[in-house]
Amino acid sequence: MNLTQERSHATFLATPQSQPQVALFLRNLNGGGVERIMLNLACGMAQQGVQVDLVLIKAEGIFLPQVPPSVRIVDLETKEIDKNRSFKFPTSLQSITSLPKLIRYLKNERPAALLSASHYPNEIAILAKHISRVPTRVVVSEHTTLSVEAKRVEQVSSRVAPLAARLFYPWADQIVTVSRGVAEDLSNIAGLPLKGIRTIYNPAITPQLKAQSEEPLEHPWFAEGEPPVILGMGRFVAQKDFPTLIRAFAKVRQVKPVRLMMLGSGREQQKLQALARELAIENDVEWVGFVKNPFPYMKRASLFVLSSAWEGLSTVLIEALALGLQVVSTNCESGPAEILDNGKYGELVPVGDADAMAQAILKVLSGNYKLVDSAWLNQFTLETSTQNYLDVLGID
Image (cartoon, rainbow, N blue to C red; front, side, top):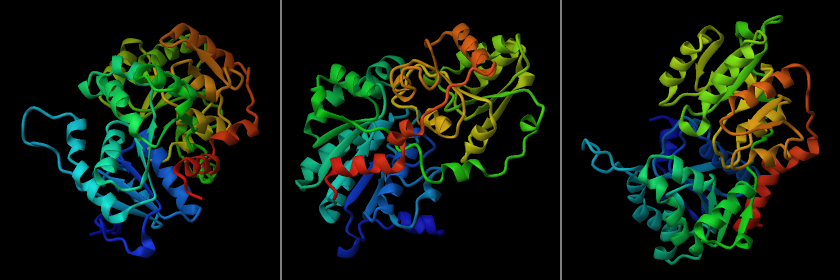
């Protein structure tokens, strides 16, 4: 058993000296934006001397080895429901099996505060607090534009998430959203008073970001004299709308030599590759796959493009700005307009408009740059975000 495995099985073994002040509750540490943000917060809080438990429904995922020794991993070891059946139960039903174990954790460990993220860990956290009758302060965080996701995502669990928020979120001690747009959307769709929702931007800019970007990267496309490289990054799913980026890239390529590098993976990859072949651009598109450290690519690329149909707050867009990379983004709900100060710090284009995206890309590649004020980026730093979360969690 390796160190990570040993730590992941340290469930319910806290001593009075290690009693957690804050518990962060989520499904796992797979390679998504929510998982990365929660890991950043755990690290930021631990660096400030806070005793932190990372409570996972299942201790697995690509980010698991990155959890520092100062953060205790609590593995609820929740098993999937009827794994051998041909019908797969939705993640929400698999997650609900963690409820009894989270109740036991709260009764035994009594953290001062519990921060949860996404559906349905948010609802489970609220239920566990009230069933266990502990004084733990429960804060739920919403990371997506719920109304759009409920319409666009096929899973039934996503479609009923607005109803779940309407029923359970009023029981939370505090509701946090990652952007003002998400807060307004949540207020409208769940019937929650906007004044009761706190917006805290994600801790996207970490002290390690610059050093990570300077790690060596050998790729012939980044050699001197090669055409500019456009970077696309994220899960290959409908939300990210990479078909629009590929079509826009094909239009740009008709005007000037350029290349597209795609970082990520997902169920739509084959469709995206087929589209690239259909547009006869496959030789100028590289599918890198998921990479643990994307920042050397950002440092060397000429432009980052966010083509999303919806977001909560795009962490990768903030990271690109912090590394000095020029950006083009859809003006989707929600987040990009807030990050780019309504276009002051990057180009904003309509969702799904390949022509407008191509024109914005050509504008940036022609040398029409927008410089970002470093003071503007302070609101997205780990230090600022961590302190804001500690404030709402009631941790001095």
